Image (cartoon, rainbow, N blue to C red; front, side, top):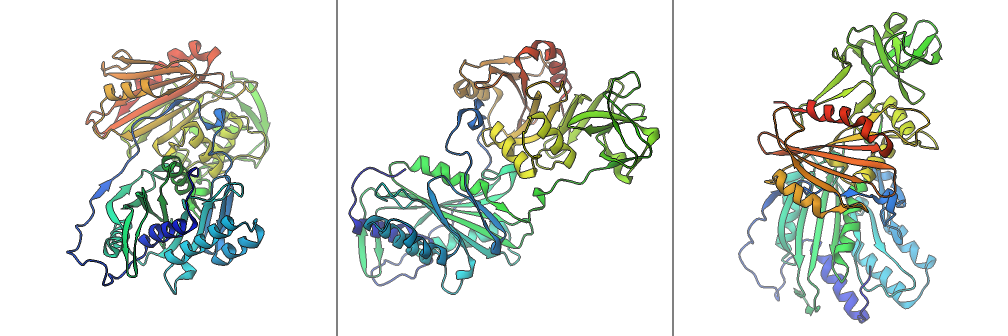
Length: 536
């Protein structure tokens, strides 16, 4: 990550002062020219880029994003993850305490002094209690020639909106005249599950005037970010500040973006399973594979046992549940349902279940042998089913664990996922078949644009087959089909992309099916594609 050219120590200190002071309001001195206020930066709505990588993911190929260390900052209710080989301190005292723990080589000592200056510069006087941590790369065997890292500040929101606070930060940077603010970006582009953030982008060039000197740093054109997250309770803004420069700036920026997306609020309600309707057994009874006594018995349940209600059959006399990690059925005559159980989906005459998502304008349908749910809001039963489906060999996954798995499956594009479907098949199978339903803003892209992008961004060993087709939908609507064999797994991946009637949304059904089952399941997969529809 560090540039491999030699830089004198005085230059490092000058660069640190140059880069980090940009984030603190400053008053113009006699050597700093006074001019008219700069124009307000443009406010840009950001969404995810269009192209969803296909093929292998970090789970199968390894990579720099796996198994990052996590540190809890309890006084601010945060958990922060940082890259391997980086140091992290959640208080200024912890930062000072790092010095005797490390090799006291001259350059290492210099790096820690500069990092302490970094923290002091970005933490307003009298507000040290707002400091939530700093992270930075450290390699005791290499010269610390770059100052890439991040700084965290937790600020009371005091009723301000995300946009209002972002404009205030941008105005402070503009007033300082030490950085040129390029834009304010607001939208779901950086966090999982579409959470809103605000990003102030600024730039620092190599010539800056300070009250007592003018410093020139060759080739020190620096892109900076202040990313603002809003706590779930609305009480706190967390500002993540970082400057990216040097030979490997794109690489480091990717790591820092990943730091932003992995921040967790410890008391986030989203980390707790969603409540679900329940069924309580009045008597001991058999649990069956399907809704009828002609289906095989797969186990027994005792009186007073409680299960999550998943769905009901078309006639309403059988309840679907999760039993030992599998979908199963109980007869309604022998259970007491909770008051909210009427909200579960009711199968149609063909045994299919329909799920409407007004937020994305999509309606999807699956046979009752598939469990479909929102992985951003799972129930305890969904977690049990997913853990069994992926043959998770330790304790059941929690909500955060499910999120990490979906993030891995989508190459960290879980914010585009609107639903996850699991196929309840034989227990001796390596893992379950599944489908991800995705929806992203088209932003002017057409299906032809997507087909070209998908063909150019295939990560599988064998080239993907990318086709534009009119034969998969009942209305003759065009779709883009992307099919490939996933490297590192025994799965055939089939993505079917559609464009909404208003051309605002691209949606996809992304199936991952065992290769030896794909041909047999293809008619059913075609029917799932055929039944998908736009609502609203």
